[in-house]
Amino acid sequence: MDLEIAMPNTHKPQVLPSFDEMVKMAERDPDAFEQFRHDMAKEMIEGASEQMQPRLWAQQSHIDRVIHNCKNPNHTNVVLMNELQKQVVKFREALQGEPSPTQKADVVELKAFKDRDDFY
Image (tube, rainbow, N blue to C red; front, top):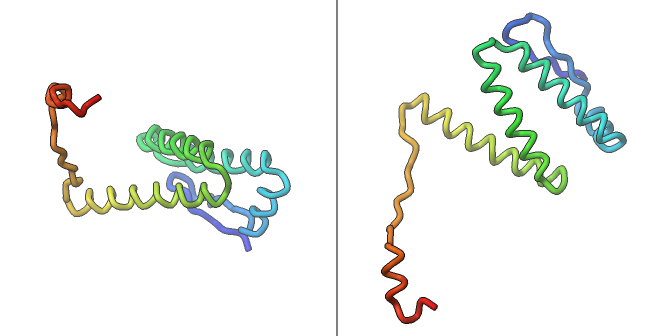
């Protein structure tokens, strides 16, 4: 079963292989799968409005860095899911007009630690 993803500026949907086919590609030829992933992302981004493209390229660059730092596919899925959850929270806050929570910390001058006998 192929998946179709509608692209915003064009009426031509992206057609993806089935999930099982993509899994097989990733297992048999990881380099080909990586090229396929990059090609699909590029096509999708280039189909977006010119105003959105810089943000989408930046997001794709971030995703690529995250994937590069992961140890295996399961680690990649967990880390990308965490990234997605962060983005959903930011999106919800933007829609609801809620400010992002800020963490409060007690600031202690370094001099206060130096004056302590047990510092060293």
